Image (cartoon, rainbow, N blue to C red; front, side, top):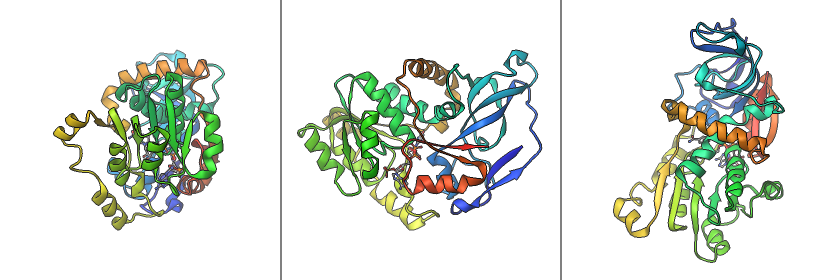
Length: 340
Ligand SMILES: NC(=O)c1ccc[n+]([C@@H]2O[C@H](COP(=O)([O-])OP(=O)(O)OC[C@H]3O[C@@H](n4cnc5c(N)ncnc54)[C@H](OP(=O)(O)O)[C@@H]3O)[C@@H](O)[C@H]2O)c1
């Protein structure tokens, strides 16, 4: 098999394709011949040496794949062989062959392409947990979605519009026209406009009921201020830690200095009628059965045309460095994939 390794912490060029013997599925596992692997921002943080959950380098990153089962381990029914599936992987997804436990795979519905399938797990599970499970977004509420053009941002927009909420999105200006077509009602170019002031303007001073913020630092402070009474701030990433393409300790420290460690204290939350919560899908492995229920609902919504993964671009395995550059240059509108 072929795998893409993060050989050491550094710029995208540290990603290298290497050959390895095909893995054999263990008891309770299936083996998947991969047709597409999802690229996530966490892989970029991992490559830069900024992701504490990643096993020690060198490592094969990757949280999700789609493909066809070609072998099963002891205790798994033979009928699985030949089925098209999508799967979550606990690292190791940047490979043309993976073995995963049966409870981490989902049958790919007929008509869903391999590219669409690989774009679903991380982005849509995260968006579902943020918008529905913890954010409790309701009809006629307003949600502010940061990085609205990213994989999670587009997934969250589709779910929020289905609920009947109004969406304000922040994104680089070149993405605005396409994001309007996805359903974002108001767009803010956060690189030239102050999102706090613009959000107040758009909501006539009221603020928003839900914010999805994976930028972190100062952005969480501003977001908390712009929550309407009963508003919830969902924090799920620290993109602001990424300033160049290699680890920048000073940038990281600056982010930590701007993080609102003290603002969200119990009395402040109570008196302001505001809520804050965090999401880390990578720490939800113990809740895989609940995620399976989310997946059932998301696949139903796919069949109804509500969930429509938007593929920004797919890259061949040997182009993995370009895939990371593409995201870090903020060029993606939607999901970036690797195809063996
Ligand atoms: N906690 C979780 O479970 C979880 C799960 C999935 C993702 N996340 C987090 O959610 C965020 C978005 O992930 P994603 O996979 O949807 O993103 P993505 O598809 O990789 O999109 C990346 C986009 O983020 C925006 N961005 C904001 N700050 C950036 C920076 N400093 N460097 C580069 N791009 C930056 C850029 O768009 P604009 O310039 O247009 O804004 C860029 O195009 C990341 O922080 C990721 O770590 C968290």
